[in-house]
Image 1: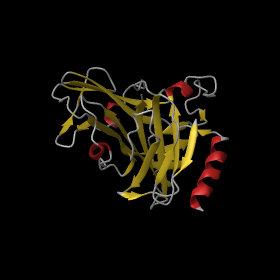
Image 2: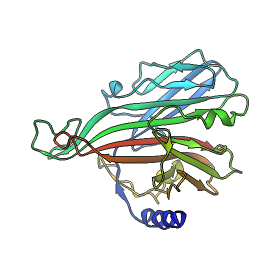
Image 3: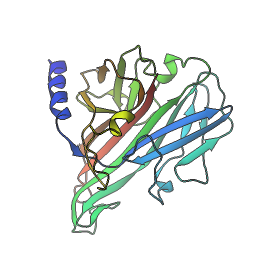
Image 4: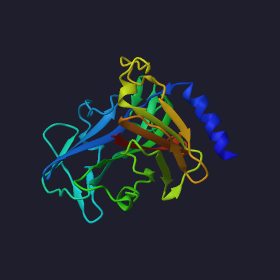
Amino acid sequence: MMKNTGYILALCLTASGHVLAHDVWITGKQAENNVTAEIGYGHNFPSKGTIPDRRDFFENPRLYNGKETITLKPASTDYVYKTESASKDNGYVLSTYMKPGYWSRTSSGWKPVSREGRNDVAYCEFVTKYAKSFIPGEQQMPAQLYQSPTGHELEIIPLSDISRFSENVKLKVLYKTSPLAGAIMELDSVSYLTSSRHTHAVEHKHPVHKAELTFVTNEDGIVTVPSLHIGQWLAKVQNKKSFQDKSLCDETVDVATLSFSRN
């Protein structure tokens, strides 16, 4: 019954749009032992962020290959991170997060503040944004690696080889290591985001966004998506809870993205 309800809700959500806050994603590439990662922040997936003075907002990205963790170092260019000590065997899980913080909709726009000492806040959320992707190696990435949680509070876990066009995409959402049922998952491809089908008001700081595909996780926190076309994709899910101290903020919001390519 829940599966059918989720499908109906997915259809309704696909037919409507919503205001798009700044998303966070991460992408990476490897040449020999050098890995370069770019953090995206905004609305232009898969490009790196462009808003200045945001370096302190993000945790340095990390690589994990099932054996060791490598923390990347900031490059001279904002939103770019590098390491020269990566191996090329089974590939890496690449992850980062935007540090927790207050964001409020005020009479003069969105500000990184709480309600404390202000009377111009219409809505406040305490937000953490997590991002993850994969860097392929010379050998096929073991399922044990891409199915392993990174430890993010909210996370999207592939249960299938999502890089292969011949396979369905099966994703699981975990919140505090437990399956999250009823979570809304959006999927957007680069080809969709750059096409005329996507009515993206780029001149607006928080444009209205209509996702290419929308699904709802079942009771096990899983969505199965058949026939995703070749290209780069971004999956996104969020979880909201009431903030404990309403004098400070209204909601706690966790957002997780997974960027991946279909070949």
